Length: 242
Image (tube, rainbow, N blue to C red; front, side, top):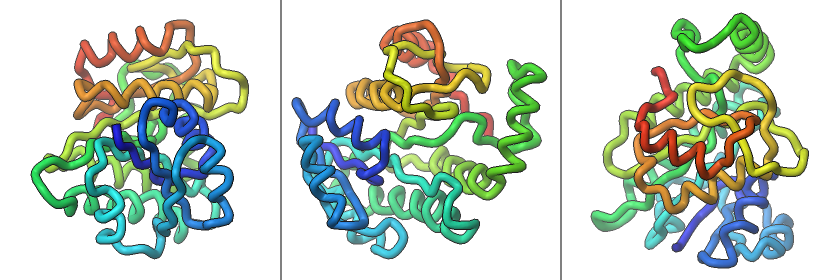
């Protein structure tokens, strides 16, 4: 397939490009040409655009004839509230709008990386225990703007019908080696999940058009990622509560 990764120099994105590039044509959008060698080392082709400064029309050109767009960009809560809004909300909306602007009836499918527990803070999932609620409250106190901007972006996306989309919502990320296993769907908020395993799940979603319309929670666990995704997709119940 022809694939574009927005936020191509991120730690998950670099891992994803390495997994996809042997069998697919991968383009990684970066904001700084100095990151180009890192992109090339993954087998991907660098393409310079700024999520903060380039217009949606430029992204639409980049997305032309692509099969799948991954949105794996994020401020990580760094740079203050203004930059967080610029990247995590406005940047995401820009990508959604750009996909809609792609010429022709066939729009690229979007696979978006969000975060676990992104929701209306008044809507507490019924499966959460006291530890989950405590952790959720702590995260919102530390990363209030980040969580809000992710929520506003996801809330916007789930209303879109012009293209197919899937949201992956990993928990706290680690740099531990991947295990190939996870807990997927209606999870608790711990344990952490390896970036290797998140990249693997994203790579598997490339071929899962039947995951369209689903938001998928993912933390560390003991079920193979393939089995966990397959069971979740077959069940067909999104983890996004609104």
